[in-house]
Structures are given as C-alpha cells and as structure tokens.
Image (cartoon, rainbow, N blue to C red; front, side, top):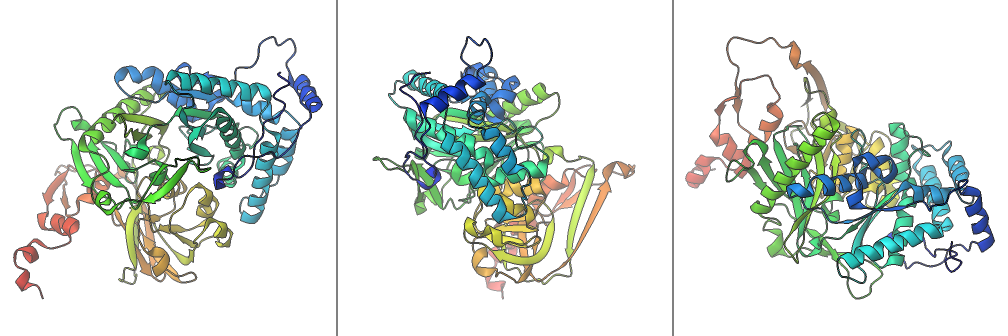
Length: 584
C-alpha cells in the first residue's frame, strides 16, 4: 500500500452539485492496522476489484451485480450478432467489502438497520443518511482507488482520450434480478470525467446501497440489508445529449402482450424518460414482422418532450443540466422509424439470448442511446422485466368503476388496469413526502427514485409528466398501484384533502373523477371457460384495447367499427368532419 495515498478526499452532497472536499482524516496507523487485520492469511496476490466488461458474463452476477453482469454478457455474446454496447469496466463487490471491513463499519451499519421502520419516513430518512455518511466518511481503501484509476486510464487510452466521459452506475448484487428489479434504487452519475471524480462517484454509488428507497425496497422484498452488496459499472458515455435516448420493452408493459416491442424516446440523456421528466415519443413494433415486413411498426405517437438533459461544459461543478426543448423539436419525432426497427431487432436478439440462458421466456427492459456525433445506436442497459412476465397468463383480472360522477377532472396515460378511491395528497417537492398518509392518492409533477417510500403507501398515483416507461410507471406496476402519468395539470386541478377516484380500467387512458366511487374486481380462470363449437369473435371499437383483449380465449376480431376507431384516435366522428355544418 503506497504511503502517498493515505486517504481519499470526498464530500457528501455530489447530488446537489457541491465540490468534493475533505470530510474525515484517517491516520496512516489506523489504515495499516485495518489492512493487516483484514488481509487473508498467506495472501500473495492483491484482490482484483476492477474487471473489464468484456471479461464479465451473467455468471459473475454475485460479484459484480446484475447491471454490470448484463453489460458484460451482451458484449461477449451479442456484439458478434450486431448489438452495439459501449465498453467499460466493473467495480466488484469486493471493493464494497473492503470498505465495510474497516473501522467496524459492517457492525455499525448492521446495528443502525436492525429495527428500522420503513413506514416511518422521517426515521427512515435519518437512518439512511447516517448509513451513507458512515461509508462516505470512511472513503475507499488505497488499493481500491488505485485499481479504479488504473482501469479508468486504460479505458481513456482505448478511446484516444486523456480523460474520457463515463457513466458511473450502481450495480448492487441484488439489482436487475429476474425476480426483483431494484429499479433506480441506487445512485447513478453521468458525464463523469477524470480519475478522481470517478473514484468519488464510485464511493457514492457504494454508499447508495443505503438510500431510503433501497432500504425500504429490501425490507418489503425480504432481503437482508447486509446480504446485498454494492458494486458499480463504469461505462463509456454515448453522446445522446446531442441526439436522443430511451427505453424499450419486449412486451407491452401494461397488458403483458408478448408480440410487440414498445419503444419510447426523447431528446438528450435518458434520465429524462426514466425520471418521468418528459412525455416521450412512442413506437410499437410488431415482433412477428421484424425482418419480414418493410414496415413492422404498428403504432406511432409524438410526446410533448418538454425538456432535455445535456452535458454542462465550461468547468461547471454540475455535470449535466436540463433545458427546455425548442417547440420545433417537441413536435417532431426524436428518433426515426429506422432507429426503431434497429432497436426492436436488437431487443428481440437480447430477449432470445436471455430466454435461452434462463431456460424460459424472459421479456426484457432495455435502455438505448443514440450518439449525436457518429449517429450510432447503442444498448446501455438491459434487465429482465419483473412485473407482467411474472403474472399468471391464464388468470383474467378485471376492474370496473361503477356509480361514479361522470365528470373527468384530468386524464393521462393509464398504468395498469386497476382503480382506487381516496383522499388526494398534492406533493410539490420530495422533501414533503413524509406528509402522505397510507391510502392517500399521491399527486405530483413527477416522481423519481427518492419518492419510492411514498409510492409504497399510496393507494394511487397521478403525475403531470411522464410516459409508460418512466420511473413512476415502472414502480407503480411493480407495487400493483393504479397510476396515471402525463396528466398535465393534475397538481393544479386536484386538491389535498379532497376525495377522488382514479380509473385505469378502460384501456390506455386513465381518468380522475370527483368523489369516491364503487369499485368492483373479479378474477376469472380462463382455463375454466368451456370451448364452444361456434367460434367466438370480438367486436372492436378501440384499437388501444386490442393488446389487452388478445389474452381472451377468442378466435380473433370479427368486426372492427371503423367510425369508433376514427373517433377514438382523432376525437371527431367521420360524419362531423364531412358535414361540419350539421354539428350543433
């Protein structure tokens, strides 16, 4: 261990744009004592904390976490099939162990988490902050920081750069599992430049194992706090700040329909979509026609794309900034049909590979990015979808809202197909989430991972912004909470303390009605429905309902009401368009 590197100088608060500064001085004697006490007997080789992504596969998940293992697997197995994935390296869980094995950190953290009450949001926040500070103040051991710096330098050299821009993302050992997503539970940092900045971001990712949302998620999903270890992926950035990025699901995330790839996108870095900051563009591609039909796209929708996240240049402490999207860009698609076809083709290849690896169909949740300099597309993350793919295919669950006030106060994209009634709680900032009471309807401009403790106790969620693949939508599906995203002015029209009903049971659009309503739920086992000699077919008036109806034991669609299709999508009856003078 080099005496020239006795400590790593870090600061807490990188999320707030603060510069890194010393927080704790650790003596050389204490460092040497800790090192000697934790070294394994007869160990002649240093532990390898950093591993190039191309040397990692899914079997390495226990030591590098789900996100990093998936990146390595795609580089090894899918790059030869044409799927482009940026390079980088993984910081393994041994680095996390090296941090916790010093200064009795493991014992202190275990004691702090022993009787945590995740339903007490104030207590949760206090304990979470203490846990993160314990790790941040301890810093990285010298051998860990040295290996990170060496790996970062090698990565920079590989792309002919003194200091390349990288994404530093948490990849905890229980993250992105086939049975638990841990979506957005730990920290991520974009456009990180310089070896010291990378080391600081890695440390904060390790500390983020104890974010409030991650603590609550582990408790609710039965994970022991000390069994989940921190690990980190360090990956070359794609200049999507100059182009676009987004998310792709290899099934419809709301209906579970398996024969589509649902792609959402917006301008700039992908955090805009994942964080629910924008209403994105959406394209649906029909899987059976990929590679067979010239145009396998079955649906296109242009979102408002209110803002975009771009790099901050000129020496600012903040690595990225959010700007308004120009009106001319907001009204045109952020990615082309050709982009969508390529993303869909890659997504199917990824799904096929993971399905073969796991031995059963494995729908995927994928993040993509387009480089604005080279025009190239890249896959930057891939994880198993854990909600619809886990539901029983032969069980039909239906919700019907009856005896409700017909007035629609707001509407937006329906997430799920359930409904809920209750008091509204309008929250304008994450610092206010402790105000929400169990069973209330959470109303917000948008949500991000810091809002998860509130989402867990809400009976429903309504946001002004966001699309079907944003964080609020993903977490609400996982929790089974009805949610409406992209409701535009919900925080202005809905009032705290007033009673409302949110209804997601009528297809792709969700509605908010005044007052409490009667909600009826039924479950039908499709296997129990007898087969008839006469083919039963559907009469279809709303194309958006087609995907959810496809799971019914019917012989297809017998009649499409074209005038209803036009009315649903255009909003005007065909006769009113032809003869407006007859409209009174």
